[in-house]
Length: 197
Image (cartoon, rainbow, N blue to C red; front, top):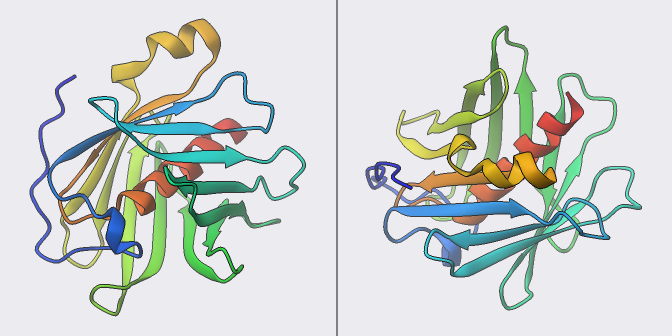
């Protein structure tokens, strides 16, 4: 797989400083087909090193999903906000405090979403803008303030398994200086939104 590396960010964009990409990084986010808990995912680097996992919960009205690092540390919980049009998702820390919101925007022919959070490195609010095609097979995430591309999502690279077993797989190109946990959260929300169509 060859996705061109993204340029390093001038300032880190993060909530989880321990999970900032130190170099251009391609992540493979793969849904577990036989998961008993709902939408669960394995997240690895392109060379196969596991870095995160997502555990879905089937008995959750808000579609709750927990993002954990490979030591089992619970980083955040993704939830869908009820009765929101367009769809809105948010993330909570392990104590239940909301710190990230991902809200869809009305658009014809494309998918547009804004992610808002507080950057723990710069101590400033941040807005990430995700824009993709109508079928959500590709998307680009940019920093609204600087215009820098922080990540690119491409499902076309890894779709043979999906055709065979209904398994969602995403290739995600992450810029150096970007929080990979936040990007994974955005991709999981994109997957949830896509499943609702």
